[in-house]
Amino acid sequence: MAFLFVLATLAVVIWLYFQFNPLAHGSRFMMRRFINWFPLGMSYAFLYIARFNVIASQRPLAMSNQTFGMIFGAGALTYALSLILNGPVVDKIGGKRGIMISVFGSGIADAVLGYLSYLWLVEKPTANMPLLFAIVYSINMYFQSFGAVSIIKVKSYWFHVRERGVFGAIFGTLISLGVYLGFDWGQGIVNAAEVHPKAPTLLHSLFVTFFNIGAVKAADAVWLVYFIPAALLIAWGVIDYFSIKDTPAEAGLQDFDTHDASSGEMHKEFTLIDLMRRVFLNPTMLMIGLVEFFSGVVRNAVIQWYKPFVEQMHQVGVAQFFYNHLGFLLMVAGIGGGFVGGYVSDKHFQSRRAPPTAMAAGLLVFFLVLMSVFLFSSELVVGLSIVAIGFFTITVTALMSGTAASDFGGRKATATAAGVTDAFVYLGASAESFSMGMIIKHGWNYWPIFLIPFAVAAMLISIKMWNYLPEATRRYLLHVEKVKMRESKSTLNATAALGPNDLTNV
Image (cartoon, rainbow, N blue to C red; front, side, top):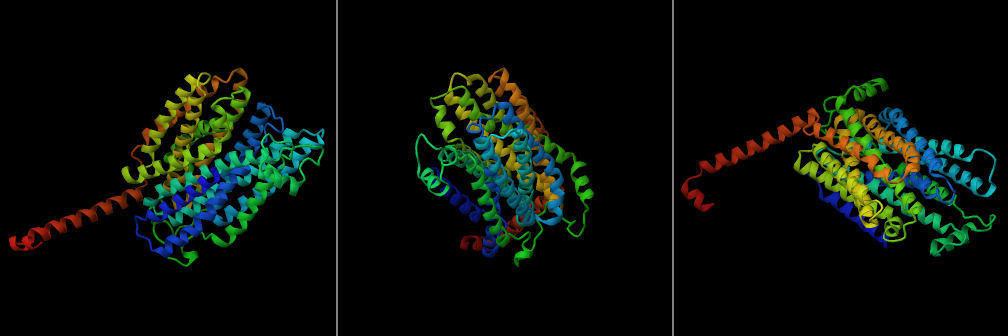
């Protein structure tokens, strides 16, 4: 049922993409752009299952909270630092090469993690397996870091500023789909890979037939949660090679001015140092990065630790519904958050990203307070709060990393800008991962309380940025407004010139 809903959701997203066409692009352009972003986006979504599968493998590999926090924290820190380095690289080599480096590199690293899982569970070597796991998981996250900046780099050439709010929604949808794949598909693979599952499924039967589960010292085949995503990523990499073009011109179409911060500068060549300076010396970009840091702390602390919370508190009531369907629920919430934020930004705030971001951050504060009050007294309120936080954190990420970064960075530096802002997200994820592993030792009640100040900080910075727009976008909007005023004035003059008989005839 969930899978059918996912397909239906993707169909709706595709329909909305073709319906929203404010610049009146031709049908050929719209279709070719779809062929470009859909496989690119699906590749990015499948990177998430190769990122969050470590969460699904925590329990069967008997990782302690501290071990799990160390592995995930090391990977998140590597991801953050790699984004800063790889953003300028993708600006130079293009998004197509970037996404292919990402999926092939991550696929190979995930296969190695599968082998390490096999050793950890079956051979039980004397080597420091948590350390080896953290190293290879960090290598995986290095290659993963090419993904987000590549998709945004390609987007910057194909979507006008006035269309990017909706693309931010599409970007949020892809993240949400990735969370679904990472949690529900990852957990589904782990469950089906058990020698004696509680509820045998068709997938378990297929695993028994093709992978001979149970033959290897009667051990659960946890390694499949790494091998299967590896194979899927490599398959998407092949599709990307044939479908993606970095610019409309490369696809045989006409390039156009997207009126972002690179407007009027497309003839200039920037070195890697120029690209870094363009971002790190831009106060607006640093403010976007800070919003993403604080939001990243909240987002990852919630989705990373909810399942361990339910397991370790032995919750067997309504919490089991949220536990079993967490990925699906976060996907639905994230898609809603991405589209609501993008629509509100483009429709009601002239493509300003900060106003809906500030609103979303304010609601994060509310639900974190609600969660802290009812943490041990209402499984339903906590579960609903988790889903709501997923809704609003994806809203923030889609608007800031997915959209504002490319608006203010411009096409020439969009990957660098997106890399830096997304790096702040995972610096936040790394900080919370190392911290939460230690905080939880003193009691789960500190979990939501620890997160409230971060949401407050994101809200305050977004309010400060309320009226920010790239100068080229501001000029474009003024030009559009003047054209509308001239057209309106012409209509009034033409009406005034008509005589009484003419008006009667009209």
